[in-house]
Structures are given as structure tokens and as C-alpha cells.
Amino acid sequence: MSSTHRIPTRAGVGLRLPHIEEVVATRPSAGWFEIHPENFVANPRATELLQDLARQYPISVHTVGLSVGSVGGIDRQHLRRVRALIDLIDPILVSGHLAWSTHKGEYLNDLLPLPYDRETLDIVARHLREVQDGLARAYLLENPSSYVGFTGSTMTEVQFLNELVDRTGCQLLCDVSNVYLSGQNMGYDARGYLDGLPAKAIRELHLGGFTPEEDEATPGGKVLIDTHATRVAEPAWDLYAYAIQRFGPRPTLIEWDNEIPALGVLLGEAEKADAVAREAGRSEAHHVAAG
Image: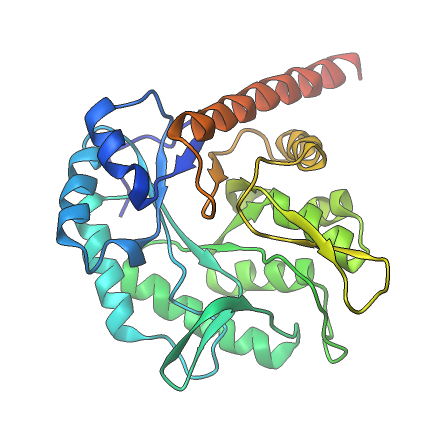
């Protein structure tokens, strides 16, 4: 199944409930919107407004509650709720996280990390197949923001993602800010990480703000926290330009979920993403011509 909207070339913004009435009333010049289905499945009024917007704007659905990494399996009732919303609004893309967030029927308010080994690979691949079958479409998996690693991991995150693409036919959402943040926290090269991803599987890019905090494990050290509460940092913009040169133009989303600013601020960040992507494309074309 595919959306009646074309995949957008302009950047979009996350549509959160504080802005939905304003967006309906003003119809801003936005490339597209992304929603979290969990904000809508039990909110008939918001769903009605979303259906109205979906007739004009491309919409993507970014799940936070499917938890493909949980040993206990997918919440099939929630999967059916997400499918029902998808059938109503016909989104351009559907995505979620490489993480786990449920245990014994309890939802945890966090996206928790996974060890990268064969056992985890089997679990996540099985759940991805179930999600894609349940939604009747490809599912984009997002790379996490990382703060700790597992000594028992037998492969890198990039190797793990490549294996999942090969096994399940899933696609990838590359969160560029997460790549930068995790590279700083975990001590790896962010550009090398992007170089290792399968370019053909990258269908969407994310950019979001992060916040430096004191690292309690390292006196005097700092850790970057994926707060989605600030503007995109300059080093993430630089990495985004590299991602555009590596993958080509991709639908790009500005994420801002906490301390949500005025809608105009979000749209301004999306305009900056468009400008950075255009300049990166020109630089790549010049490099190819010169070579």
C-alpha cells in the first residue's frame, strides 16, 4: 500500500497536539507533518482534525509504542489500533524505534537499548515481520540515541541494522542527530557510521535537539541527552549535510517534543534544513563534476 501523496522534497515538522488547532486554522506552508499515533488513537477530535489535514499535507506516522525489541512480543491490540489510524490517513511513511519499551504488559516511558547479538537479531527480525504484515507496508526502523553499550554485543549497530534490512526487507529512518550524539557519547566516528548504512534502505532523515549534561560516571565529563527540547545543534547540521551527500535528498523531519516552541520556530528549522540540503547537493554536484 502506498500514499496518494508524493514523497516530499521539502523538510517537515513534527505535528504535536499543542499546534494542531493552529495548523488546521492557518494551513502553513509546511512540506509535511509527522505524528505519533499514540496521541490520536484515543482522541477522536484530534483524529478528525488530522484526517482533514491529511487531505492537504503528506503525513508520516512515527510509532513510539510498538517496541520491536521487547522479548514479550508485539502488543497486537496496539498494532491493530495503529493500523486503523493508518487506514484513515494514508501516510507516506510509517516508522518506529530500534528499542524496547514494554515488559510484562507494562509500558515504560523510555526507549531502552538492546545488545547487538544473534539472539536479539532473531527477536527484532521476527517482530519487524509481524509489524510489517500487520500494517501491510514497509516499516522504517530508527537508529537509537546511545548512552551505554553491552559487553556481550557481537556486532556493531550498523552491522545489526544491515542484517535487519537483509532479513526483513524493512527500511531505515536515519536520525542524524542521534548518530552525532551517540558518536560523541560512545566514542565512534559519526561519518563512518553513515558510510556503513545501506543507502538504498534510507527512506527518511530526522534532526532534533540534544542537551549536554554532567556525566556522573566520568567526573568533569559531559553526556549528550536526546531531549528534543532545543534547536538542532551546529555539528548535527554539518553531519546532515554529509548525510545528504551520502544518501541523496531524503524527506527530513525536525523533531521537537519537549518545551515545544511556537509553530513558526519549527517551520524556520525546516527551512534551514532545506537550505542545508540544497547547499550539500550543490557541493556534491560540484565535486562530481570536478572529479
